[in-house]
Image (cartoon, rainbow, N blue to C red; front, side, top):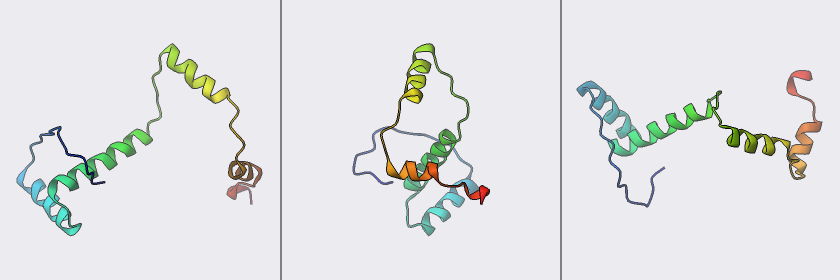
Length: 92
């Protein structure tokens, strides 16, 4: 997840000594520095939280756009077609 771009936005956190030592030990096992380890772990968890989101609050315009996207016919895709025509694993 390392980027060639320069990091220019600070994130400041305070931790207990034992937390810092734990992070440092884990980072060392992966040959990463503390910053890279914390950023990668934090971003991975943030992505998981967002992917698990089940409630979306939309205003009327956002909902109309979402509904319109659902109503559109998707372009033909042989992989999707084959998936839709096949039996579900639990039906076999």
